[in-house]
Image (cartoon, rainbow, N blue to C red; front, side, top):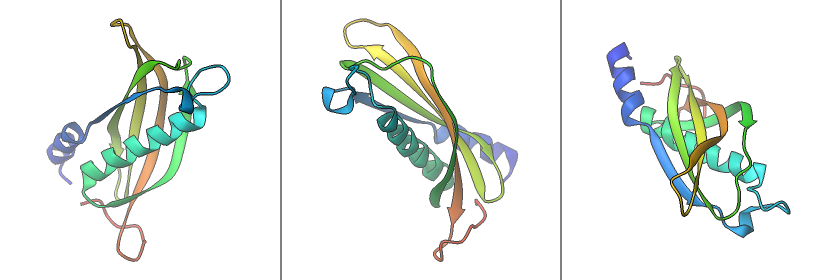
Length: 130
């Protein structure tokens, strides 16, 4: 891909998903389960990667996920996925989770991580990202 096409696709593939944190997704500390946060992040990253490439994409790794602040029950989370780098058959997506209080405008970054995806063909073999 040409650099300007890559840059344009990075912008147009940015993905934002909002979720409310309900008690059924929290632990005994009334904070979001780490595994649930990771699942939401992987889903956001997958959507971002697919929107960028418009190809079959699979997660091959998650890189360093930093839990900076606990996410309390009764808050709103915004997951933002952005393509951070593109290779021949793979790309990386950074996902940040921001937490918002429901009844104020306070917002802060709670979790960050990066996910690597590979484009695959109909035989599930790596293929070039077009």
